[in-house]
Length: 268
Image 1: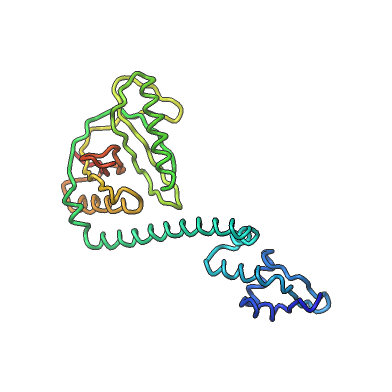
Image 2: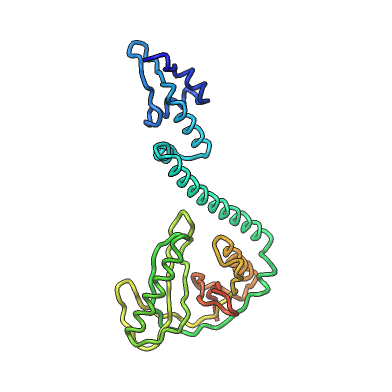
């Protein structure tokens, strides 16, 4: 020990960390005392540990968990900044999601958005045979699943001599978020005979009607697409003559030049 070592109290004061925080970081291996007096139990820190302590304190102010801080403090400054900016983008996306969910609750309380609800239409969907794939995904995995399932299903249909011009329907059987996976289903109708292959399965869809809304480009991405689902649900809640028969879906491509429609199956 030298005069460049500081007692835990003085060290904590220098870096604005409480005794409790210092003990926690020592237990976690983040900031271990340079020297412990065996006779007194006093803990001493080296002056050279001050920059690390201040960095840990700053990272804790961001609300980062200790496990992530343990990784970040040992990176060089440039790599650490790359990681932090990526984390900040994720946090910003989560905040946008939460903001939209709060607004969704406000829309529910008001009975929906009249402008969107005025654009809702009904159409009849004929009975059909369906080839489909199901998978549990997060929001961030949806596009990859959609593209791959579309390509695999249409390739299987071509191999079986079936027409592949039908639109793709993406069913949401469970809630999907950035943090949690939910079961989704990519499905395309076909005519004639087709065999299942691997995780591509077959089923029959009954004839029904659907209430649908073409999705404006401004609302095509999550979380803003929630507004479309909310508008349809609010509209259907006001129609005592209509009953929802199953999971909602997105239909690709959509009507009227839209990238996709959102549709709810309803009674004939």
